[in-house]
Image 1: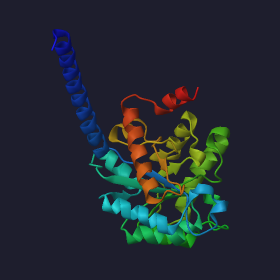
Image 2 (image 1 turned 180 degrees about the horizontal axis):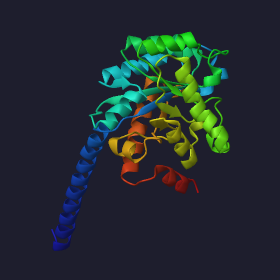
Image 3 (image 1 turned 90 degrees about the vertical axis):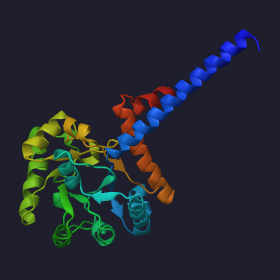
Image 4 (image 1 turned 45 degrees about the vertical axis):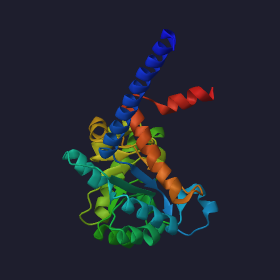
Length: 282
């Protein structure tokens, strides 16, 4: 064997070792990241209605139960946004935690999702539209009261579900401060801690108004996971992952969780996946 070939093979061997070490580091670094990061799942409807009226935002009770079973079998602790943020504030461990949220306050949340959450000893945050309470297809005051007594959390989804980035400061205050105050009056001893921005839309002005209204945290709709660092950086821009029914069952749910972790890991490393995807679409 010639000296050139020996030198080439040696370089290949060294390169292979370097790549193996790098991949091993990334693997264990990723596992460490998962241990300190938490997905916040965003649901809308869980029910048996005609899915044509919902698109992929309606999860059947059967699928929702399978998702809860998946979380249970993988040793997840299912909590509300409020409990999660309390753990962040007090610097407690969040390994294998996941927070569950429901937007809009549909009546099927009470009829279908609530009993299943109780069955699996899970809690969640239900973001309700103040002016929709008790109207057709939305939860009533009595239903919300029952969930509160059972340990569920109620957050604000504003007064009327308007896009908060498209209204003036006076209207913004009414949507945020007004809903927080009136929900607190409607339900005895309720302190509304968190806000869910309608359609996930927010900006610096919306965050400032949320802080002024007395909220402790806010959730949007940007993909990813939350860590102590992201919470401390901006607790009014918590990452949240939508859960939809796209015909792939619990396997799709597992992929949704993995995508949330991966997106969060890449973001922490300074890699913007959205920019990369946009580049390759050109």
